[in-house]
Length: 291
Ligand code: GUN
Image (cartoon, rainbow, N blue to C red; front, side, top):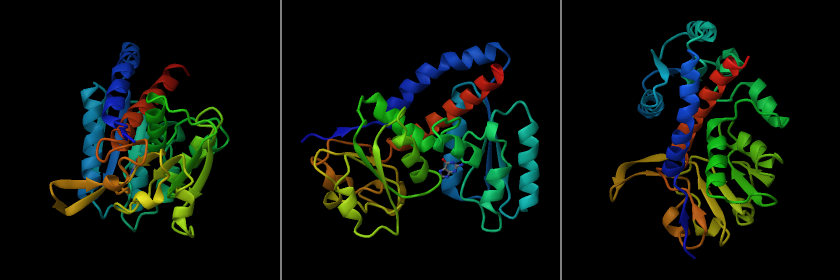
């Protein structure tokens, strides 16, 4: 079987083409969608992620600012900065890049973000709205995955999606979103590190979403023939292997020819996450315009 490559780069570029008219419309009303990105410490991977996000905003003519903060900043200082951005009308979105240093309570920080500017969709108000089927800001990675599947006209309705990984960033919101009638209408199984005999679940999946951070863990013995594989993981190989620097959670060489479609790493889910951050920030500015 030929395995189709689901390119996040292609889909994200198509999205950027479409979103430009919405940005122009907002700008005509003196509303330039703006993102405040908070980066605490100097973890190299987080730095690159934030840079990539902000560069995309700049290339679309949108406002953005990076708050690069020292790793030893106190929790209270960070909360004060968030509070000032909450009040600043130039910013429609606030992103606190995770993970945060150990001395800072993630939950306190996420709860401090104005839910109407929470373009990551991590605040419990937004997770709650998603869980009752009335989403405001949907977390960017699950939203991007659904957008990608939609672009390639893959019909999910009635299919069985197996999500591996229960993080608040990807796995859990993915499972909620895909089961909504208005989004995926799929039957969802959520697996995690406590799941016994994991492959007995993944082999039943019509769509497998691998979001564990375990590099190249899922080989051909985990997938059903003809299924669709969404590879969310991204791990840097050090040292690189034959010029391969980044790998996903899926051992992609071994599943090629067995599955019907797969997202590459890089160039699959990653570009979609950034595109949906743009979409959520535009949406936030549109909510201000229409309020
Ligand atoms: N860390 C890993 N993924 C994400 C994300 O989507 N948003 C934020 N804020 N931090 C992350």
